[in-house]
Length: 275
Ligand SMILES: NC(=O)c1ccc[n+]([C@@H]2O[C@H](COP(=O)([O-])OP(=O)(O)OC[C@H]3O[C@@H](n4cnc5c(N)ncnc54)[C@H](O)[C@@H]3O)[C@@H](O)[C@H]2O)c1
Image 1 (cartoon, rainbow, N blue to C red):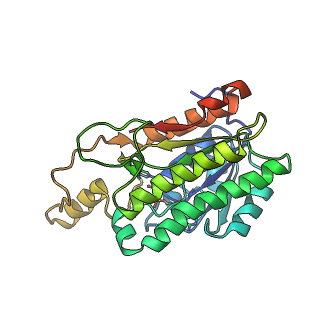
Image 2 (image 1 turned 45 degrees about the horizontal axis):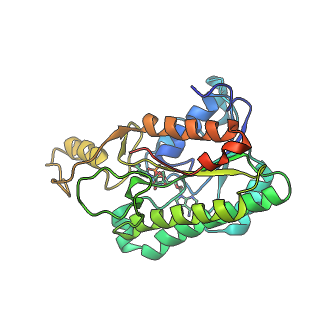
């Protein structure tokens, strides 16, 4: 699907211990990439990261997959992140690390903005420093959300040109991450030869390996397992569900296109809605 873009490629993935990040890392390893993951510990117990043995060298070797360096650190720490990027010298970066839960964002708005907004700034600063030293990645994909738009509840399917906003702290933090990325793209990465930076706005992802709290299918599975009624928080909501591999194929496709794109086509780097 992606030609040979990822084979033997140095790829930096933030949030590699999470639901989507674990699937992305597994896929990249199968494509033969040399992955450096940067994240906190897996956010759930159990987790796909542990179940699939992503951090275990022998499990990877048994599957004949590429290499994975598992770094446990915080995106809110600019120096640690810059140092990890310098050490990994990635050719392609996928940024997934985030506080991804709407309900938690009401309880912990400061943590949510610090992680999702300043985490993006810290990542792009690290990329900028690498680029200044002539060792910058060629492609950067920042994973945001379809919740980044000003949600007017009209039933209209949002497209890339719609106004950003976000009702709750989580959604607005993803809108902010979009704005930060656009500003960095225009201010620091517009010249030929510099990293091509894009955002991807997929949402409502389902699939195996998700044990997250406040997610509808894991909630259903937990309720069925416990023999209790399923609690649906917004029974009137209509959501365009997609399988996790759908959104990840979009991220990988975007990364490959950014990697391959001629410098003349850099205007194409921008925001991509995958909902
Ligand atoms: N799952 C969905 O339906 C969905 C929908 C839209 C957008 N997203 C976005 O996709 C990305 C991945 O989501 P997920 O569902 O895999 O979430 P997850 O909670 O399973 O994983 C989050 C990852 O981020 C890491 N992380 C959190 N805070 C960190 C910090 N301060 N420093 C370093 N790492 C940190 C965690 O350790 C974990 O690896 C997020 O950016 C999320 O906002 C997810």
